[in-house]
Length: 131
Length: 138
Image (cartoon, each protein chain N blue to C red):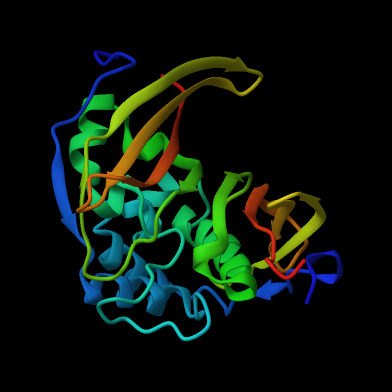
């Protein structure tokens, strides 16, 4: 498919359970208890634990790598804009695709199930060679 | 804060162990790309390479003297120059590349940017990842 007809499908995450937070803490070797203990999180002004920022970052990246493969991805820039909490579901959208010769760029938005923007950014990947 | 822009942490090597990547993907619950498997020779999922995962959080946060209670991850800017596969051995020497203090209506925010260049076995920069960590107040 030529990239002029190409779009990155929306990625919807599964529910981000506390078990997922535990796996992420282990995978990252992240010692921050703000992801694990509600009492600790409340000391920092949060209502409960928050998900690691890597959830939103990874879902943004996975939406693209599912669509074009890892090898064509050149840049993923993500700014986290709001916390992600247990039970949240994240949806990632790529919009405003621009083909600039060998490279394609797009804007990224990631929102939770209430429509709150939790991350935004931009990505660049190698334009489909068949274009 | 006793640290300055340009501070470079000692080089460490990091092996992309299959079980670490598998744990990462289990946490996320989403297949990173078609045909992905947590076995050597398969492409590392995007988002896995960041300093907490590869270098260790304690040393960096200790140097920044950030209070974890008031610290959040602000985002990332990752550039990909060469493929990285499960099983690869990478070296990295994180650098504090930016420190910015902003006064906002909600108080002071300190933005620390850490740049990690992951060097592969061929001596090539495979990935350049910039993480922003933000401390509120103080």
